[in-house]
Image (cartoon, rainbow, N blue to C red; front, top):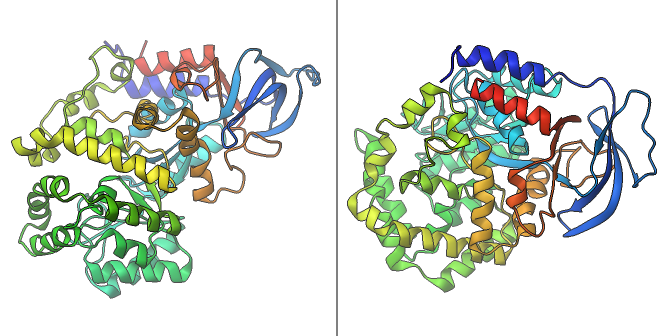
Length: 474
């Protein structure tokens, strides 16, 4: 049991762990993993200075400087720090206090936040504190400018019910300085097309949900560059996708549009299973690959709906704030749509998603490893669930190397980051994960990091243990 208020414990203890080093660090004798090439170097010395990789040389070639800390990397492997491309760390005013350190514990050094319930100024302040070394956490790409139709699926969304409103929203999002705009589920076809067209005109990428009122082909033709959640890909492999979309449009004319849409969509799983067409699917996936339409699959979200729960004494549960654990054990509105029929179909539905995922990967559809972790999404855990997601990809049929590409190479390139491209190289940002075994041969080693380097700050095993103890309130 925690004996003092969690927030006070975390703030004091985590800040103590996070004090930035004023000096460089030397990682001696580590093997560097080139994830994209699928190769491992001979032992190398690696110097980190000023948040960047400053030097790389043969093992033993770099002499420690005066006052420089030396980390013994002999027998270990260094790979780029992991990314989670779809999270929500600002679902409440205090979520970041415990969510952000959990990513570092799991070797996740970069996240893209896809929708917040706290002011943008607070999000930017926290991201800046991380960059300055005053707060422990991963790099944050703030991309949560989400747009929906009235009344909105979540509080605080921008709303666009007409084409004019859609264009005005794009101007507002661009003026706020967001790197992308996020579409959501209830957008009607005309406002959606207007939004994407205006965003493309000014060079603002459109990512997010494929609205349930349009087909996946419509989204590709409009120019959406990234889609969140894999279910819409599988739905596009149904010969009745257009019919299902039309049903949602009718449902959204109801007095309670969100509830009506959810009710309408409860029958879609059975339709998808009955009308899956392999030739159609391969054609859709080929168009996605040609369009370079990036997908953030969030496959682990299914665990919540099918009742997968960790043991109460599991580490990930122990790190949760008490109030979050209590909230997660209360009824959730999203489970109201889980009818007995859907529960019976769950295994077949998951198998279909996984089969289409394999086909999408084989077709060359680019994937961004993503979890949808949030305290508002029960049993989807900050940090931990990203590792679960990668394991899911391997279980489906990807190699460890292919899974790692989705978490190290593809995300920073898609986000357009000038200092990261999925390589450990001189001049690149020093976000690095050091593990005991070759991760190209198996991902289990990711769960026991020897060190995590975030923006040049080295968290060795002692620092990670201290961080874990702070989160547990010990």
